[in-house]
Image (cartoon, rainbow, N blue to C red; front, side, top):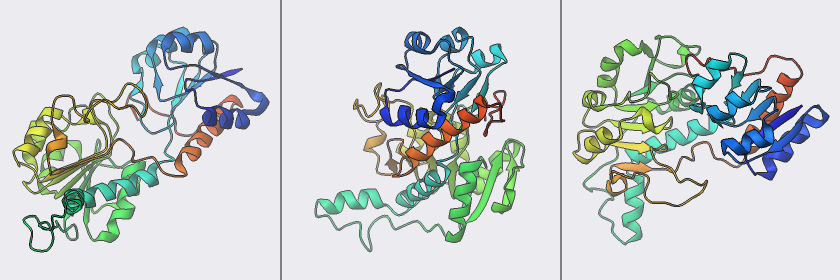
Length: 329
């Protein structure tokens, strides 16, 4: 029995092989579909959050796809639906770390940390006491969470002690941990929720329904002082509409950890994070290179979860975190 890992990373490969022991053989390839088919065309499971349709359709023995993170938008949903015999699982091991980072992004944007640091390094003290842009207080304000899954719930738990009112919007207006928020609404009532909010945090998966959710109309509902934080996926937001709203001062600011363009190679260097819009020239935006889940211990936790969940599946046990591919989460 084989498990395919389409990453040339010795730590991932060795850790998962040690967990699986003699019950499965780990095989390795690049992320190219042809290479995946050649190395793991007969694999029963693949450990990756990026699985192309070509591989899914060709790998007749494939029965499980285990993502390392929460997002499964890079797994070909149509190919999965065609097969009807593959279970897809994700991981929420990074929820606590992402929640901490999200609050840091919110505070960095509200308290003008990035620009103040940059200017003081030049010897410019003009952004200190009495400067043109005082800190935005978060206590007593309304923070809207769009989504109330594992990450959003972890954000709510940690943000509550700051004295904010927590509101949430979900698809149905319900959720597992609604006790963490002061008010919850369904997506049908999103306009009034956005109009009330001082801060908006996007903590929902990228699906056919959420793609482009934050468009020009959504942004027009936001207060001129509102701050948008995105730690979900870039395409949930209309890039052009957001840039225009920020550049024209129609919203207060944004903090973005996810983007529309990425380097072709991991850790690669290409250019500023947007090919078409100069977000990096705006002082009311905090830029982050998709690192919210990256902390000193999280990588090992994720790898171990992936290996242990694949082992459960191989042994005939019910795996954790099975994704509903019709909903996309």
